[in-house]
Length: 407
Image (cartoon, rainbow, N blue to C red; front, top):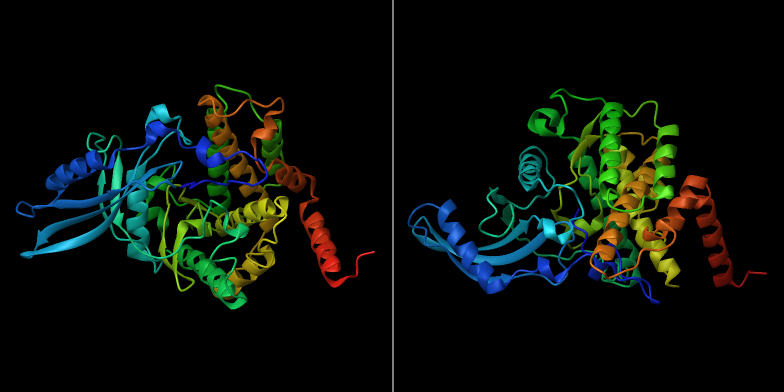
């Protein structure tokens, strides 16, 4: 998950962007250029004479991987060709990483398989390098594509090219984003194309894949809290998931895993590149739908907390479900369960992010560990079954005030 930051809020709230990015994880561009140029000579053919002409380490780098942008030229077919590239690098252990492991080679293989077997727009992936010597960690290199990404800092709901777009353009982006999921989920036999995503090498049912995913999330939570306090709210959430586990989760498809619009490069409100596949998994289709809806709700709730209008008509759960049904013919089931599951999964990540901040002395451990979860009130309301009702009430109140009907 490339958390470019999950949020930076107004009014004195914590800046999770800075918490998540200790200075040690930075790389010197000049040294990076020399390392990349030397490494390219090992993967290109003799006589290609590679040259790295520029390197940029973006200020808004990811919390789960380091991203390096670079331009390189090399000779192919007797002509020196230019290439705009991206390297995704696993973090150092000393950076207190967000996740326990970073299998970038698997992400490379997932992207290659999705590009080969679906129409999802995937940047060309060039090489996967497991030897950390060149860049300080395993990495892979892919094509760089141009376009616009809905920002995380500040969240796009706080005011951005997307929030300021017309209703028609927002609808176009929403529809095309849901279409990405329908196209991905049509991939035939993903268990054969990506056997590493199967525990025993056989095709799982949707329920079996969901159960395996849940077990992985439990292990992740145990790892994230091994050296500190746990979260009663997260543990309550796992109990809720068990109590409400779907009886029939349908078939297992290839899920993107991190299906949020902040992981898409758009051109003219259409996806030009779908990024960040480290959370790819086999599972029910609704796993991706719930994550996409919740990730927008996360930013939308932050906008409401900041007193901003946000984007209340965008990526609404009923609209996403209907768009998916009309595009795929699949009747979406148990969507509220998958949205709660997304909120719980995100809570574990946020808990780890804040634990990271505490480890670097950038935050103090609160008396109530649940307050380490930025959206703990949202998750509490979802578990209580009051979230959507309170959201509808707030919407009606806002509409009444706007029309002068409030009493």
